[in-house]
Every structure is written in structure tokens, then in C-alpha cells.
Amino acid sequence: MKILFLDFDGVLHPFNVRFNKDLELALECDDKSLFLFCWAPILESILNEVDPECHIKIVLSTSWAHRYGWEDAAKRLTPYLELRVVARTNGYNRPRGLQILKCVEDMSIGDQQWLAVDDDDYLWPTHLLNQLIKTDENLGLSEISTQQILRLKLKELLLR
Image (tube, rainbow, N blue to C red; front, side, top):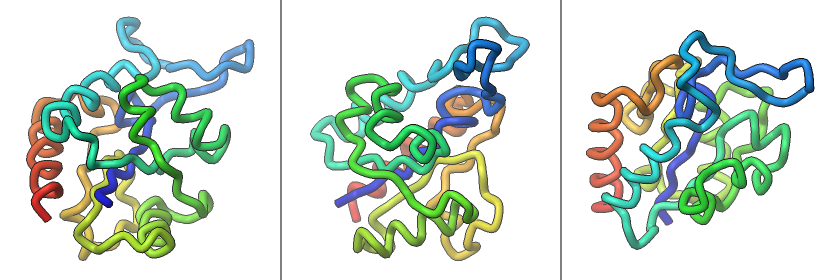
């Protein structure tokens, strides 16, 4: 099984998400053209191009999955992306890289059978930095260079 660990904030939309006065999650951003999950179609397009047969599955490594459960968090994605979601990481109190490593171990995923796309590289194991597609927390997947890196690494993942 090939896995893409996926964060939401700082990847599928800018990082700054807060509860509004109605206790609903909202994006706090000066650019009013941006909205929650505004860059999800970019990920969908890249995955559809690179892996139309859906060999790559998604494991949610986002605080949304811990707060709402992974099935409810997945429903916020496009239907195409939602179909790829199979699980979430555990250990929300641990740094993201360590959460992912624990999940890799628990799911018996081979060392070279996964990638992660995330804006958080805090305490990420240095020997696994090549498996992290690090996004800018304000630009996420809207950044062309990040899209190119993701596309290339996903193609390489399918060849392993």
C-alpha cells in the first residue's frame, strides 16, 4: 500500500484557521478570495494525473482528524480525495513526524512506501526529510514549485 500523509492547515488552505463567533471554523486571511480547502482541487488534480487508478491512499495527519474523527474530517475534502482516505495518525500531542512514524509502524507500511505533505517539520526525523513535501504555511499547494515536487515524488512513490 502506498500512503500520502496529509495535513490540512497550511497545505489545502492557509494555516490561520480559527473558530468564529458562531463557533464554526473559518479562515482568517486578508485575501478574501481564499477559503477553507481552496487548494484541495490542486491535490485532486495532481493525484488524478499521477495515480488515476487510486493506488495511493491518504492517511490524515491533521488536527482536524483528531478533533472531528477521520471520517468526518475526510468529508470536508472533495469526493475524489475522500475516497482515498483510509485512516488518521494517532498521538496528537507528539510532533507530526513522530505521529507519522508511529502510524507507519502500526500499519506495517514499508519505509519507502509513503510520503507526507505538511507545513510542519518540527522535530521531523532528519533521515526521513526526503519523504516530506514541506509547504509554506501561507501558500500551501498553491505554490507551483511545491506542486512540481509533489508530482515528482508521487511518481517516484508509485515506482517503488
